[in-house]
Image (spheres, one colour):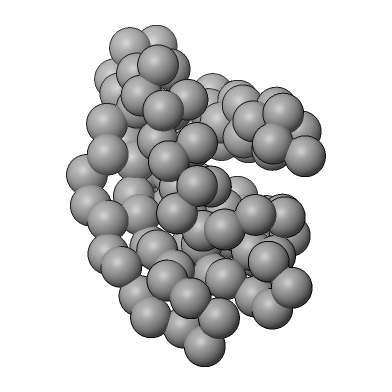
Amino acid sequence: MKEKQVILNGNSVEILDYFKQNLMVDHYEQSATYGLDFEYGKGFLTVFEKYFFRNDSVASLTLHIHPLENEQVEVIIIVSGSESGIFKIDWWIGKSIMKSMDKLIEELR
């Protein structure tokens, strides 16, 4: 499992829409989204899944989008399920997903 936390400027609805659009283009399927009410606005917990042919597995990407004060948003990124087989080999899937997310985050900034 790989994880990362970032703080972005903007609002949580726009940030969620941005990730949805870009991840769908990259063949991720959104499996669940939950709206959450926080002190500074609406937040989201959403899960995306992607199938990988090279090791016949599905990896999940979970985003927790939490609004903060001053129009900032905390995004917690968790990649799981990328390890497969008896030896829990990742085949660089987790690293690949994080690299894609880093690119999307840089475009957002």
